[in-house]
Length: 296
Image (cartoon, rainbow, N blue to C red):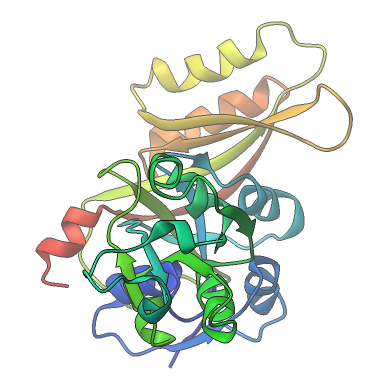
């Protein structure tokens, strides 16, 4: 049985990996910090790690992307998309009036992961503008703190699974600002999955391109290598190399397998320009609809 590292029980990562695996058996190993999730697989304590890397509303999760690029060298093996459905969670005895309505004015602090909090700004401004927003390591950690500090005016933003795990109540459902709030997850590991959880229709390759410093128009040439071969790019993003000010690498997702003759030739052309190319992974990509239609 494969061991999979992820953020704490009841987090969106937990819900997402259950959605991906379906009935496939796996041992889930929970960690408080994303750094520990990465390092668990780096040190061989687990076979894979679940990493959220992009969100519909907030875009890239920069800390996680930087870990993938600068701290570890473990290939991406699977990508899938899962809806981030956040809820306001607390002790109903503390906040529910006799009428059954929630008295939001009693909430003094709202705890959550900063990405989750950012997804709920409209709701928070409208219903609990007086509440102090406190960032913690995960939504599940936030729910745990609320559970252990009953009567102190604390609430959390998190998942229904997290609320059930800590036996707390849903004060308000689906408090995210947009209905199309999805998070992109990747499964990283040193070996590919022997058995894929579901058939897939799309394969994707993620590469990292570092441009030569003395080549004017290099990025245009890089993009041209994909364009004239009609290779579709689903994402391109610049991030600092952390070597010196003004030095960037480009993270590029290509909707093609790395084994494709066209992509192999494109990478060769880019390297011939003097660019450094690092393949971060070539992997099956699942949409939420594909997983749902498969009966999960």
